[in-house]
Length: 220
Image (cartoon, rainbow, N blue to C red):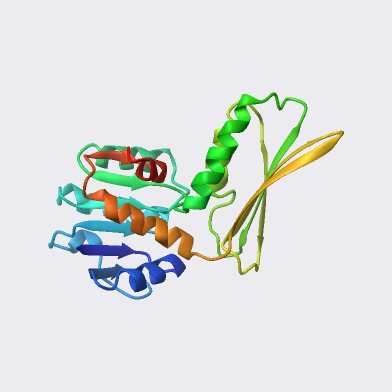
């Protein structure tokens, strides 16, 4: 498979290592002066873990290459950029998610079940801790977690420090009598890379449209 890796940060480097048997092209301003819009050859897949601004050139390339598929792990898009992704997904396969961890997928499923309970007496807080290199604050993952608790207000507390862990999300429910805390901890970034590889394995069987990692796991 011919794959463009857009972004050569921590995730990008791991993806290149794990996908070394494929024909890879790395796009990153620090390592390459190649602009994706200038590429004539059609690639089977673009994997983007770069920054939100890259989506404009990626979508421009895809308009001229109808068979190229896209996996997005970048977060922080605004309304205009999300609309652009929606438009590309009309005639391309696009998988977009803030978190490709299977264990986070399970975590969010558990959070969804909590809507079956009356939590109105609880103060609900989501504390997220990431390394200072994490660009968006709060993270896209945190927004996707609190979206599951659609019946309740959840305060997000974002912490950025020099942790070596890849992210901790602690969802706490506290009332005058006690508290409950649900924690997801990403000890390294391979859990995200494994999820991307799972997505690659299934992406060729998908029809055009916009999918989440949950869709991939559930076989939708």
